[in-house]
Length: 239
Image (cartoon, rainbow, N blue to C red):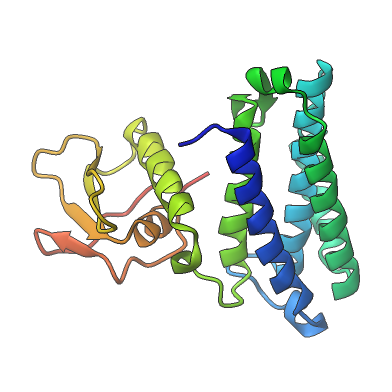
């Protein structure tokens, strides 16, 4: 995956613009309707994306200033903020998402070159600072699908699908609860990705976006093929 902040900034900005266009078309009934995430309405998803942007602003500020600023005050505070904002009317949800998107863009814009060379402490451990941009792009693309408004994994940019597939496959390779797999992306001349012992492991083939959507629980995998013929393995829960 590229760690070039310029490329990642543009990709995340494009994803944010697509998400905002979708959010702008949601009325009161639509934002109150269930999302594809169990227990969350679309209002929950939109509020989460706004607070996620603010959390990443905190990390960029920490990288720029050297201050010890956590992404969120606590997991409980994060969850409370999402719950408190989920039931707002569409205009308030959209305005919040736009403001938080602008704050994130401003935080990126004021980053000096040397600040991109450090690390920040996330909820899942230390990250090289450019991964903040990747993390934001990932949140926008995956949760856009979670809104359940017609944006699908097949709509993800090819570069995003490939990056996410490699990240997820790499993470699974380190997990003892992951089934052995050989993943075969069907998009051009892409290398196989191996999880666990490839000896006798099923080969799962299909477009990169569909492979990774299945691995992260955003698709049933019904368009994928398994060799030898049989049911798809069950991946462990994603982050």
